[in-house]
Length: 347
Ligand SMILES: [Zn+2]
Image (cartoon, rainbow, N blue to C red):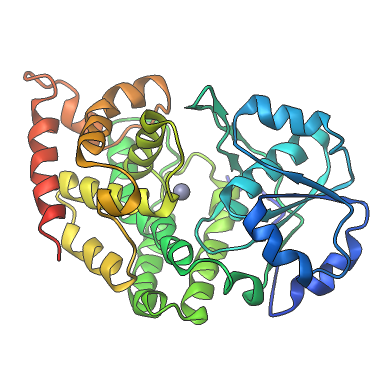
């Protein structure tokens, strides 16, 4: 049964931040330093209440809740870190939520999950409030580092591998709210992404906005079918597990893109097609470019069976390769070697 969920109002256009921010006197802006420095002069009158987010550790978010963030409006302004923190505060305080992405690097403004951590381990809060409003201001987004904006490709391309995992989970009898119609609509969005990838790679605003448009078209599915995994599965497990092992954040869309290449290869799921999109959009994906090493990547991939058992219990290609295996993780180890050779061979 479809659940009626109120959708966020998305307001787009140059100068929208300046116009709408005039009504935020009673609000608190939840942000980080770089986007705040850029956004501040663009705002009508900078909100008097600002909190800077350092991490998504639950303890830190609770400190922010205690530090006077009880305001009727919470505005998340920045990248995934600021927007996830704003979701948490709105959820805890009952405030209404406004999200202002400062880059198109992630889809946090469209999802109802806050990627909270507990001592470095993912402990997400689900079903956080839907934002009342999402502001997409090209004047703000164009000032973000192009590398961050391009990385947003990972948040759509991840569907290439998650659709396969989602169907595997469904066939394995897991309750993942399988919806063939959503799978079909998602495939259509992947074809759209393929078409806009060169514009993103050329750092054109139209390409960036097209990415956010896809996120916006996914939003109703995120809200109505929270169990459906059409937009995150093994490639995200990999990216989260890698960050957990490294004990620090990477650029999310970049580690997700590396995950997509590895998982598509393990799934025997057109890895060359995914590589074509990533290269057209010029997203960094090589371990040495994105702040990690092949040793760490290998450790993360081989830790995925445990990660999926203990931290994020999602069924994926990783289970399909290791369930009932008579050689332990042999299939996964061999599959990883071949996937690594594939990624290293990309020019
Ligand atoms: Zn993501």
